[in-house]
View 1 (tube, rainbow, N blue to C red):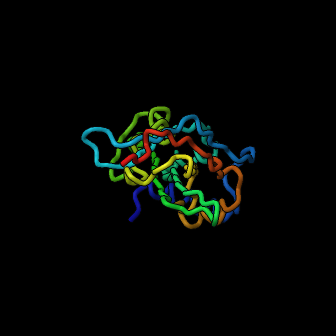
View 2 (view 1 turned 90 degrees about the vertical axis):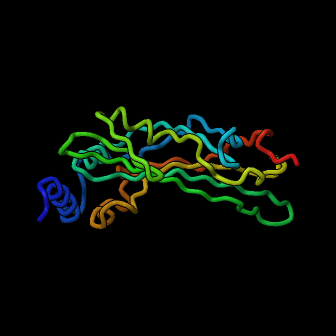
View 3 (view 1 turned 90 degrees about the horizontal axis):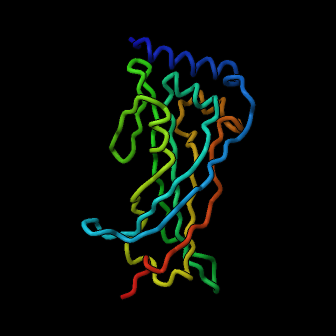
Length: 199
């Protein structure tokens, strides 16, 4: 037997699927803007590696806010790519990493939860929870010795809403819908000389 909160979620998903559309709002694709990104080496006490910190800014479209309030969890994805440039052939992809952040709301407790990497934190308000979605810190994206000469490599980052993790009926109704699109472009970031392996 479904508890009342789960019934409400189920009704919302099925109603969206039956109607072939979601909530009425202005249709637009939301953009996530990269505000800052930095590659660093491991710090004392950390496992050796190449680490990324990145911050994005965006406004969550109203249909996503309303789905969240009904108990639909939203999944966000940080992407990182490192490629080695080769003048004699196609560039070679050395690292391709993905990091997922789950944002959910419990109508029973009226609290928000952000989950990532097996960890979870609860918040009283949406405004308190969202910075953990927008910002990532000390994400290990490769081994410490992967970069030799920074001029020979290209690093790029991207952020997006992962609609493939929505409930199946909702995936059908939101496919291609601008108001359910939140993403950034692939953006090149600086590779500072201090992250290069010198030995």
